Image (cartoon, rainbow, N blue to C red; front, top):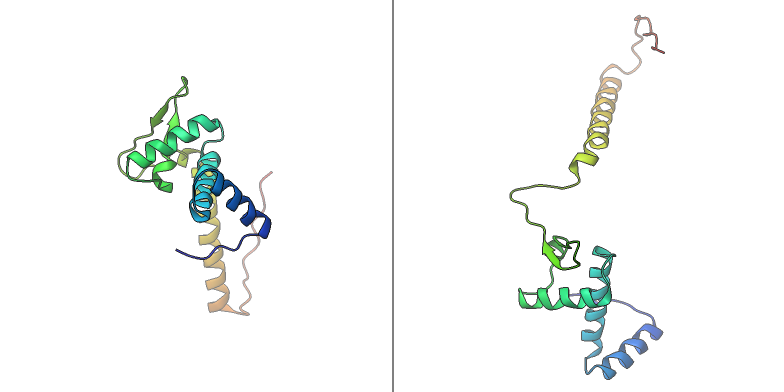
Length: 133
């Protein structure tokens, strides 16, 4: 738990909304954060579906970012769980090529820097390799 600094206007908004809905200022702020987090995770859902997700999570032990990201909606707009077994990332196929290229670039640069550190000012007599078109 920590301290969050907010503007005076937002504090007043929290106070008014919390009073109207019989919540404390902290409970109102937490509610708005939960709704905002679920809205960012599921931008296609309307407020009613977000509220249903909040109830679903409350009945299942509370809202957790790891579980919230694993719930989606089916074409009939009903909530459905995305279940994976083991360590699977559904987007790894899309990101595999850039990840491999970045790893290769880091390894090559690491070797260049090690070579520079070991050889310093040593001049090579090798001819440069011509580039292919």
